[in-house]
Length: 472
View 1: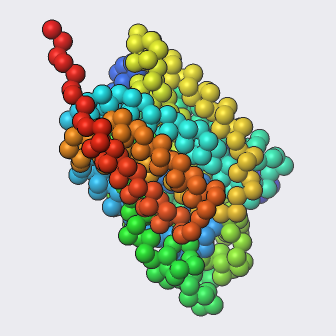
View 2: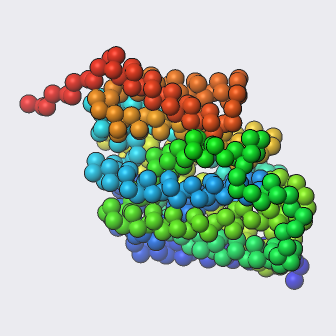
View 3: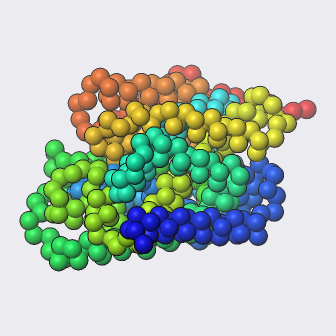
């Protein structure tokens, strides 16, 4: 049989098998498929293995695998090790609060912690929605499509491959909600870990387990001033980027909110944190091996390596694993966007009696179309992972500042936090697009600190609002 036919047959067969297994398990577990809670939070019945699997695969998508391997240096390990710290903050600090206040979205915590906090909740939700629509979702589609094109060289433009990914992701998100997403994530997560491990094993065998000839600066974990991650940034922007991503980001925390209780959520989070110490063997080491084999080929490193070292039938299986990773992050973004819009904006402001699931499905369709339209803009990015992390700062640090002030500052003023939020976005935008005096991770920390300061000072000037009077 022709090599390409073998790859295609294995790819289609494995992808179809996971889809069938997902829908079988989904049909077996679904209890209230038409309810908004089931659509957004899997009926709050997710067990810890599915929480861990969904957390892991939502994070490890093509932009992670392609981008971090594309950096071709060991410094990227801090993005993986630091994730464990962010997950511990989620488990020990934030999850108990989310459950105490019975939150459906992470932003709901802001409203319930502050008098008159509803407007702050809506503002933060809008920032999340803009970030998902214009940064996260198109980046996931672009990187997944770029990987497939670099590995298999199909006679298709990147946008056409992106359309296929988007339609498949929409099918999972719109038809099955978070329950189907979490189940498919877990199955595909197992496949990805196995296949990613095999890629690394074959790649190590290709170089005879010999790293000689690779420059020392690509093997060190302590970055110099001109490196991708200068070591001082580990104590500034990076730690807070992890706390934002793993702790307050609806995309991630939604899985923990879908557990039956706090203990089950924490077990899933701890399991995901442990697995993050294994992922460098998949998302970092192959890129360094690719440097020894091919030189500095940036974001093309992983696709070329996989195409070279795996036999055809395993290449097809790996393509299925990457497809699962892409779909995981994409449909997670769609579902989180639908939850934020429906629960935080549409139901309280437009129509409280609306069908939450139906509204969510419409939102997912809109976000799919807009994210597809944005894909061509990312084709000129020189570094996928650097571009993604830098752009995320536009909303991540101002939003994290809002959570910090709302949770830890006594007498915080929601209006003051909203003003500070806008200030933080504008400040980081200036750093990104007009004046960049320091590494972007330092600038993220400066943005966070400045936003907190403005929120606290303004809050003291404006005074804490009186809580609303109880209804008579």
